[in-house]
Length: 341
Image 1: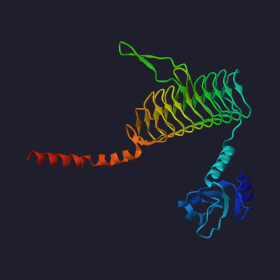
Image 2: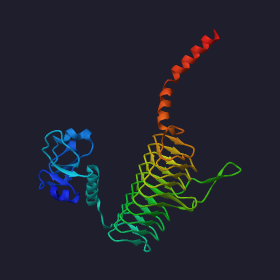
Image 3: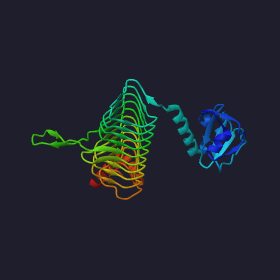
Image 4: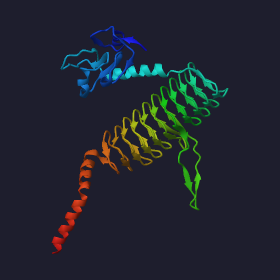
């Protein structure tokens, strides 16, 4: 895609400082600029790169005031970071857009396929499936009976979506992820063996959700496991049966949520967080890496850390004391000897 600085500025409601006729055809980091590239400056840690970048144009915020002479053309916008993100989306859409049904895919005759859909080779579309317009199903994916997938979704290679699951619009699911696998439900018997409890629910994924690679989202025992609008999951996450994750909550890699727990809106789970089952986590909760949660979090907008997780500031103080335990132990022993004497 090739576009002039002037055209780009108009698209972004920006103002050009420099040559509006320069043509741009790629994007680059400001410190790795090249001719014909567009870069951006949002973090002032990188300001020095602005004055010697090889990029042809740089997006900056409207309130940016240079401290040295600027040789590169600037495009001033309200939010440089947001504008650059928007442009990356446009580049990615153009580069990755696929349409058509490839040879070797299997599509049941009862499936309903929208317009401008892509279905890759060796993908399997079962009976009763509904796929919305402009959705892309990459090779070797499995879409089970009666699954509903909305518009403008991307289902990457090797994704498995079990029967009756519902996927909203603008959802991205990366390779290796399984949606709707059985929840971990087993009834203990008198002989100490376990009998499987049928998992007859489904998974509902609302609009604008993105799920990383190799995640498992288990179907509900009854009812639905639900990922609300705007949820973002990193790679290698586990979401158990009947869990509900609130709007715009994000979950970093190797984290796990046990069955029937309800996570609020706008929460942040850092890497390797573990949350026990049947809990309620309040809106806006932030859990530091490797935190463990074994009780309800009722107060909103708390920042917690540790296992079990508690106030972040207090946990940092506790960790400092923990490091000193060997010396404290030695001191106590010495004091005990003095007391005995």
